[in-house]
Length: 552
Image (cartoon, rainbow, N blue to C red; front, side):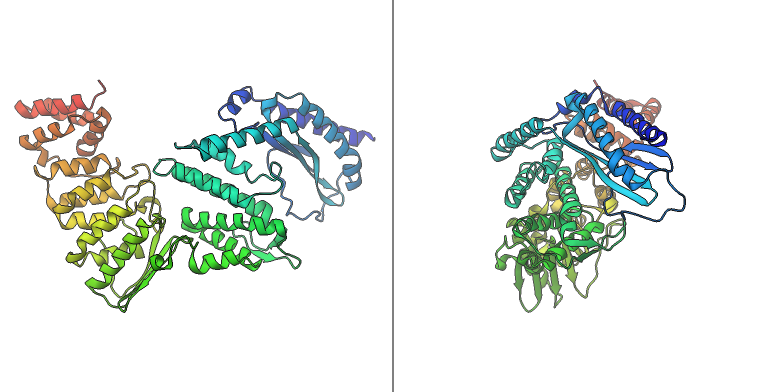
């Protein structure tokens, strides 16, 4: 071995040592003890050599890059040297180093790749593949026990961290050489079922969807398709020799499940990816993909998903979480028909996170700024024009409201829980619907929704601030965010209203009172300054509010 090659190898070993010191986290054992589903922390390393520089990182090697490229400057290494002298030496060196690491540092499997710039171009190679069979079998047993005890026999919400690892393990062909599509999707469904109504439901869904999407893009698609798109927008062209073998027939179900998850639960900008997955499955002859595109999953009877008369046509596809409503004749009867259809659809189990694709010659909007101008919004605003069907809107809203579910055609600061448009419209129309408003507010996820702020402000504009309105307003304010802007300090100079406010906050947590104080007066400090200047009963009631807003 010549001196130059020996020097390069020594530098590579030094960089490997540095990386190993970096990953040898003293907290590794503590980290893996958080869940039985984590066997170790690190499972990959990439050594890159170019222009005399060596780097070792966790970045995955992109095997879709061209294997060789023209070089403008000569390199010290040749491809033969890399393959015959460097790779065997690095593989042996890394294996010895791995054997000395604490068990918790490494996952059950560790892969070491190389990317070398040589005279002939760029060489991509797998340097070392290491599998700890004992750790692998132990992990498989832990997965079995977890699914048996926490999922199959489970009755309680599960932890997002557990789903993070389980969702990926089930798609790991190193653990399961033959993926069981039916079993995997059943597990994913069970996780969502156990976490329904839990604040972490969206996180579980996202974790499952990301794991599936990564598996489809990194493992399934390359077997049958060429990526002809860009790094920002993927495009897939079927390989000439692509045929679904028996294993492929089984795993195509996972591809379709991934597409459905993306279409149902991910933001609208991910929609093209979900549709592309379905199209790829269709190109490979999947009958299931064709059926899903045209009719939905088949989980609902056709008389539930498709209804029509001379005035209105309604159809629903649960795969796309879409309802299409065509109003052929604008009338009270048309919207009554559509509302009964929607309510029955949701009561039958149709996804509550959905959207309405509306065809109508009428375009009404709720008198609230900041709401998304979508087909869903327009349908309910149109229906509110007919007072006789307001009870049907209430019935729909009760069926639709669900914490951590959303209309899928409104995002970011405009996102809102199903039932929002009906509740807002009814609440601003008639005080008889205030009980519905309060029921709605108690279901709002304040961390991810703020449209209730605008509705609360609109209630004040519509009905004013008085003894009848104050209890309703305070309840709404409890579920508003700190960004709500209110003008009600002048009205609360009335001693009677101030006393009522103090009576209403009795029984609330101090932080809830503090929140109300912030929305009304801008914070406890400002309220204290006001109390210092007040006299008599007003001073007494303001002091009482300050006390209620302080941690006892």
